[in-house]
Image 1 (cartoon, chains in turn brown, yellow):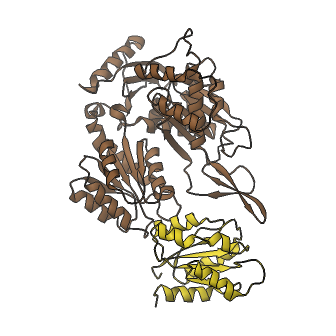
Image 2 (cartoon, one colour; image 1 turned 180 degrees about the horizontal axis):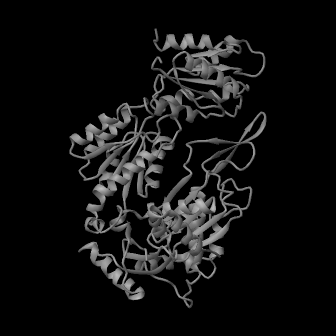
Image 3 (cartoon, chains in turn brown, red; image 1 turned 120 degrees about the horizontal axis):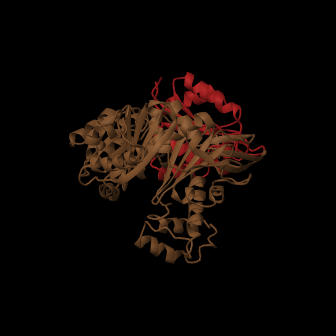
Length: 451
Length: 137
C-alpha cells in the first residue's frame, strides 16, 4: 500500500496526516505540540505515535513537510515607487509564502533602518528601477541595508544594470546576497517567478537551519516549504479542476486570501490601470485576525465604517481575548455569537482589499470606467478555511461577507458557491500535489465540501 | 538606440488612442526607448513611470481641449518628486476654441513646459527638437 505522510510544523502544533494513494483518502490525522526549543523531531514523533495509535503501524512511501514554525518566513520588501517596484516586490514575496512584515519605497531613511533592525527579517527582497532605469535608489538602499547589524539574506530583483554592484555592496559588508531577475523588467510588467524561486532556494538553504528544522528536513522526501506556499499550491491545483476560486483563511493573527483567476474585466468597455496582477495571487492582512490582532481588526472595521451593531460589548471581549487567546466562547456565553460576526468582518475587509476596484472618470464623451486590480465577480467558488468558519453552525452567513451585490466598485465575487475545508487539508494537499497532482485533486474534491 | 528614455501618454480623461501610438512608433524608430502609458494618464503616473525608468524627458499629449487644466502643476509635482529640471513637452489640441498659438504656447511655457506644439505638428519636428535638447548628435 502506498502511504504518504504530510507534516505541518506550525508555531504551536505539529500536524501530521497519512494519505492512502490507492483509496485516495486521508486515513488518519494527529497533532502534538511543536518542540522547536529542544528538537523539533520530538514533537513530530509524538504526533506520529498518536497517528499510528489510530491507524496501526504505517510504512510511508514518501514524507512531505511544510513549516511555519519560528514565526514563518519573515520578509521585508524594498522598492522604488510604492505602486510599482515596491508593490511588485511585495507581491513576489507574498506569493512565495512569506509573511511580508513591511514594504518600503524610495530611499530608506535612518528611522526605517532602525525599523528593519527591529523587525529582524529572515529575508529582504530588494528591487527598484526597471532594467536600464533608475540605479541610484537601489544602490543607496543596498548601502543602507548593509549598515543594519542583523543576519538577514538579501535577494536582489531590481534594475539589471546595477544588480551585481548592489550585490557587491551587501557581500562586502558580510551579508548573504544573491541576484535574480528584475521583478519589473520593463514598465508595468510583473515577472515574479525568478524572485519566487530565489526565495524558495534561500528558505531551503538557510531558513530551515535557522529555525531548527535541518534534522527534520533530512527525514523528508522533498525539501520543506513554507506552509503558506503549500496552501497556495493546494489552491492552485484545486482551481485546475474547479475553475476560478477564492480561498479565505481566517486565523488568530492574520487573514490570508488566495485568488486563482485571470481577473480581467467582466464588464464591457472597462480598461485596465496600474500594475498587472498575477493569476495566482495571495494577500495577507496582518491587522485582521480573530485573536492576536483583534484590536487592530476592530479599529479597521470602525475606520471603514462597518456595521458593528451586534458587537455591543466588543471591548470586554477584546480584553478576554487578550488575556486568553485560545478562548472559545460556549453556547452560554454572552459572546457566543461574536466570533461569527468578527470573522465575517475580517473576510469582508480582507476580500475587499484583495479584489480590484472599478473607478469612474468623466470625459467629454461621457463616463469612462477603468479597473485597478483583479475582477473577482465571476469566481465560481469561495472556500472557507479556519476554525471560526468550519466550526460555525452557519458558515454560509460568514462566507457571504466575501461577496457583493452587482454594482459595487469593489469587484468581489457576486454569486459564488460556498465550500469549506472542514479538515484543513489545503496545506497537506499542496504538499501531496508536489508528488501526485491527480491524487491531491481527487482528495480535495471529496473532502472540501459544499455548505 | 540612442540611450535616451521618453515617458509619453495622453493626459487627463482623454481617450484619443491613435496619435500616441503613432508618436510612440516614430520615436522608437528614431532610436528612443519609449515608455508609452497610453490614454487617461494622470500627472502622478507620468512621474512614477519617469522615476522607475530614469526617463530623460516626459512627452504629454492632449487632444480634447482640457490640456490647460490637466497640465497645470505637472512641473511643480516633478520638482517635488525629485525630477528637477526634467524636460517636459506637450502637444495636441491644447485648448478649446480658436486661440492664437503664440498665446497658448506662452501659457504652457509659463507652466514650466520646455516646448509646446500646435495641432498638425509632424513627429519629425518633435524628434528633431528633443534630440537637440537631450544632446543627441
